Image 1: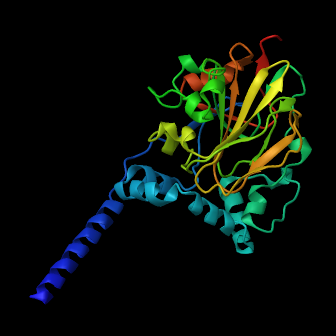
Image 2 (image 1 turned 45 degrees about the vertical axis):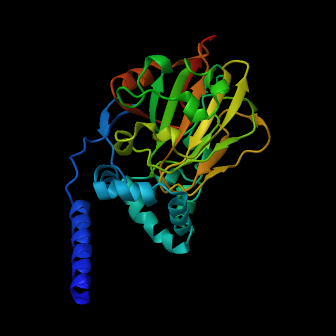
Image 3 (image 1 turned 135 degrees about the vertical axis):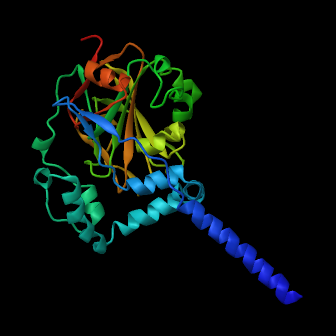
Length: 325
């Protein structure tokens, strides 16, 4: 009798395991390619997504979603992976990665790296990213794909029917009131991008506000399933006070497999184009918030966003101008 009960128990366990395996390999829906516009050529291009199959599985498969909620979004996973990328053995991943994504190491300050993270956080030659020094111009703080909104209250953010929640993002209802009808720029960094970020304007810098959160992917494949990711992920921000642009919020948002957000600037003054910090391994995002009637975002960025396209931009290039200009 006892033997029959044991056999029945194992049969149930095997059936459960079989069911989970079947769900794990259940076909995921076909994903639309991620399209963006090259700002210089104005040509529409298709993004090559690092770890695309993994992302699709995490956000579109029942077992993948369970894995996401219980494990993949956790800090410990991203931190452990980040530490792996610090190990000398990870250096062997650099050359295949460079070749697959066509990365130009000729503009880097060095070409030999001790680990993948050493390569990932590489510095560029100063000439590689010239900065628009006009005092009335806001420059891009990072390399990446940009979305821009002149008025947050009149524009859906990323997905139809979802609006950017300033209060949740800043975790400060009083401060959020200054920006609820302001302008928004979001720059998404893919794993193959240059991962140091720079000040977009000059001014005095407030103390850093750090908000704990999860580590969801910020890739559009994930955002189309969970538009509120930016308000769930770990993030930190400062307020850059300027006489020309008002109080500009600059925020860095962590993501899946981002080992750390590292701030390298010193003191309480920002100089436009100077390095503010860097992201260790993983995709990530920089967010800029402007008060109402302080800046006019460049028309091509607004038009591309309105048409459903991100725009590829580089650190130091113009993205907005003061309304007083």
